[in-house]
Image (cartoon, rainbow, N blue to C red; front, side, top):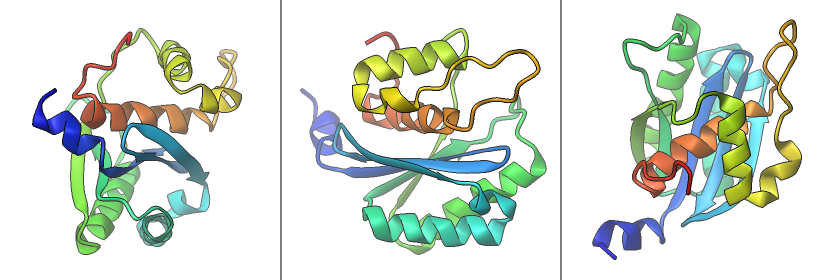
Length: 163
């Protein structure tokens, strides 16, 4: 075992993701998924996103905050990008490590990814969304699985697919 996995096993990690109309988080104590939540209000504007992030920081006491690194090919809009910036700014001001990670697509779709993640973290099974019909919007619980995937990029060094 290298030094990095030993260090990661002791860190408290808060991964925060932003999607249209919601912001969600997952909290890991080492490699253990401990808590998750979402806020619709936080997605209204950067001020609300910052305020909610401060609450989550007080609740979880993380060593590391992980947010999405926006890459050129991202379809994230300007408003979502502003929310991510607000979250990262709060983390930096709170003197926790702010890590930005690109959101990589490791499965054919988000629903296959959610299936794999519930196998690894069965405690989140009740929140696994069903695949929507073509005319339905993405289920709001999908935000948890996006946050878990983002956290695993750091926790497992990107080696989590199909584990």
